[in-house]
Length: 445
Image 1 (cartoon, rainbow, N blue to C red):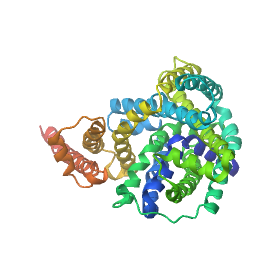
Image 2 (spheres, rainbow, N blue to C red):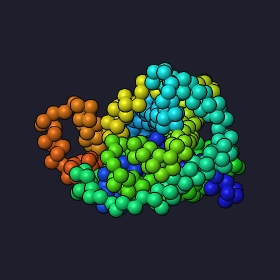
Image 3 (cartoon, rainbow, N blue to C red):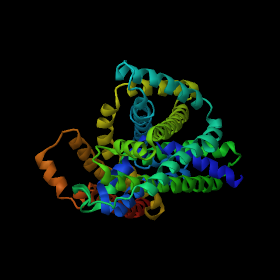
């Protein structure tokens, strides 16, 4: 396969990853981190770029991707975990969130004189938006050409224009960090990286990338893994460069006013730097980014659910995913975010632990007890952290979780994960050491 094909598939992967959260969170991190920007953005890149790349590598090295990884804990867990991942990054959270942000940034700023209500405008926008998503998703074999060759370069050029203008015109020095980033800014950026949802998306995109390479004539497992990792590095390099650029732009914007979120930071920067043209440019950036991510997620969901329920066609599942996403998108952005953030706090630790264990698989002989022990204790802590964000908490459990190392950084699950893996390892060795003795006793009898 030609090198340019790997690059184009890498650019396609970048465009599928790069959606609403990838645009909103880095500039707001920069705004709040101020002089602590560099450690904060490093932490962000670890989870928003490094972790998805590790997920892609893990997926490429096993048959049937994420379901095989999950089945190492238990077959039922593998099935449930995989379905939950696809539903969350697909029609339940990921796709509707991107559609809403595309509306808020790509169309709404230009509708000031329109008398229709926001809900009606959103409805009309999502009808057109999801019709286009549906039509492009029906032809996944063409996605590399559409996204890798045309849409992604247009997206990167648009971002480059905005960032270059910002760096030449924004002269204010970085301000002191907000309270959140005054201490342990690396770890705070690490947790902020969860919000991109890219580690979960990588679990789903693995199947899209592998399918794209198979359509290019690659069939050997080794070559598929190699090409997937290479395309992942292309996408990762582009993501990291964009995060650094728009994050630093956000840090420089702190001297030009106060902003409530990353959307406001980018809106103010684009209009201040480029006037009306900047607003249009930003609308193009958000619309392209959100659209390509929605297409990628729809294709991933369609391909996965077709695999586990082959009686329904790929077209049927794409239709179901598109319609469900359309309905949930019309609930509004705030409702979607309020539910998705606590869910990510629960899902990300499990994903991190599962992927980490997959790289050490051979060192503990793939013991199910190691996987189960680590995931069980991780899940208990992550579940409580997520429920707490929903307002469900207990003072006794609060004290217990707060006593865990790294809990102040939002990483209270780390030590329980290690402890669960260690207990599972010891139990596995005890069982294996007991079996030879029992076998000898049976032979003697």
